[in-house]
Amino acid sequence: MPDMMKKYKDEVRPALQAKLGYKNVMQIPSLRKIVISTGIKSSAERDAFAEAKKHLAALTGQAPVITKARKNVSNFKLRVGMPVGVMVTLRGARMYEFLDRFVHNAMPRVRDFRGIPKNGFDGSGNYNVGIPDVSVFTEVDADKVKYQLGINITMVTNANTNEEAFELLKMLEVPFAE
Image (cartoon, rainbow, N blue to C red; front, side, top):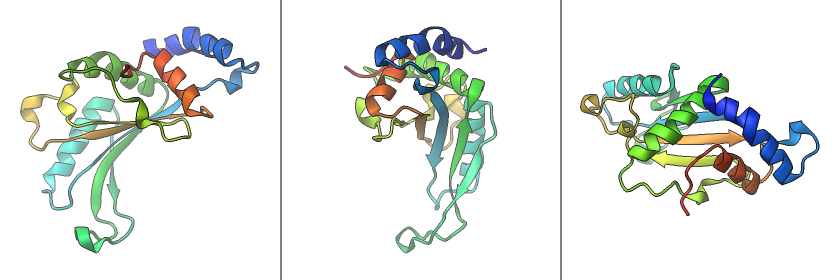
């Protein structure tokens, strides 16, 4: 069992239940999944998708999927079915392992890091944060990155409000800015 998952079950869940006043353990907010995605310009070379898949697979330990355009956008010269990005969805133990590495390894490597912004909540208890360069992760060798790759990390919770989700993520040691 990953350390972060053990921390959630042993410390965070009882603390959240006491703080939020829930009587039923099924009401306690929890992390459902983490979605890591990146968009790639349609004009980029084909090997940009292969490189993005390789880097996301190294980050997550899971094979990513190439996402395709759902509709035509003439201003971007985009047609239905053209590849536009790469994504991977993490659940269970892999999700908690990634969150642990993201919080304790990757975030401290960002230059002048003072925390991630609190305004990434969407109103439903989900949190989004963008990382402009994937090389802050120790799994990615910065010398082998041909195309600069930024990623979006979405943490999906079953919290009812942003405040509950904020408390959950704060107790899971996500470093929010003051």
